[in-house]
Structure formats: structure tokens, C-alpha cells
Image 1 (cartoon, helix red, strand yellow):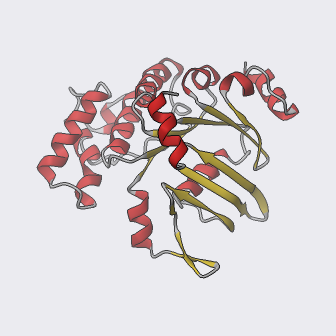
Image 2: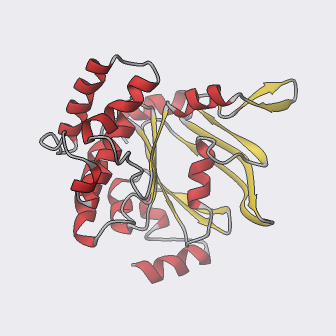
Length: 263
């Protein structure tokens, strides 16, 4: 981590998760998760399927409402506000405003099939009133160039490979200039030969000061870009630390078991 990032880290946390619980159909998916993510850092979340990784990401921007506990981003409670010693759910409009400051890149791209690549990226700044259409399109062109798709602005999602679609999704997440971007297994829906192009774009983002939280099974990628690795097991954080510690010298038996199967 650079000296500049360390200086910011000492002042405030980008993300704070406090005792979050979440269940589906009587099954506890998150079981008292607490986590702090420093500004400008890259946190990679690992764990077996069903360990709660994707649910944790969705709780961070209130796509899933926790049953207990709370989340704050940049010091602001997400999805709720304090009323005395209680937390009250915000109105949907206020939650949507908060989400616009937290980028989210999904497994399956979630692009609008009826819009061109350019309009997919420009849509959110226009819809939120951040930019007029012409400026939003200029920004979209800039961002598409950044992810290597400056020559595909007029294409539709169906005309792109999976790797290209995911790079459009990353450009779309960047269009609102979020301080935090969440990635939910961004390469899991891709053919193996397309994984590298998406990871390359994320690596570039990792050097730019944006706080990234990435759920992935790409252990080599985690080793290369992560400042912190978090291992979830049955909805609990059982191990957390720098990649050299968690990946090379894991302490918890579940972490060791998981890594023995994927390395």
C-alpha cells in the first residue's frame, strides 16, 4: 500500500460491517459478520460456494437487507438511519441515491440488451441527473477506451464476447465515479480464454485508488492484487489478513482445506 493510501486509511474506513446477520428460508447465510475495509485498498473475499460471499456483497449496497447489524460506507449508514438507539429503513429513493455511489459488477453482466454499448455506460449518469446526455456520452467514450472497447461504442451486447460484455459492465460501474466498487465473481460466467482480459482491467483499477471488494475464485489474481484477503465459512469470517499470510500460511483448518483444493 502506498504512503498516500496509508495516510487516508488512518483517517477513516471506506466500508464498515458490524455484526451483520442474514437468513434465507430459515438458513443462516451471514452469521454476525464484522469487517473493515480501508479506503483505496483491494479486499478479496474467498470461500466455498454457499459460504455467504455474494450475499455479503449485496448487503453492502442494501440489495439485501440485513436482519441484524448494519453497514456504513464512507461513514454513512447504508439503507438505514438512526432514530435514537434504533435504525429505521430509508425510503427507496434515498437508498437508490446511496447505491449510485457504490459500483456493482455482477457475474452475468446485466447489460441492457436494447441499448448500445455507449448508451449502457451513459445511462446511469443521465438517469440520476449527474450529467446531461452529451456529457454522459463523452464520459462513456472515455471509459470504454479505458477498458479497451473504444471501437465498439455502437455495438449491442449480443454482438460482444462475454469478456467484452464484462468490460462494458466495469465501464458502466465507473460512470458514476463511485468511491467503492463491488465485484461478484466477475469472471465466473466467462470462458477460460476470456478471463485474463477482465482481470487485466480490474488490475488497472486496483492501482487507481478506488476501494475494491472482489468475490472471486482466482487465487493467483488475489495474490497479485489484494491488500487484504477475507475467508468466509458458513457465513462467518474465519480468517483475514494480507495475501502472504492467508494464502501461504493459513491458520484456520477450513481455509487450509479450501486452498488445498483450489491451488
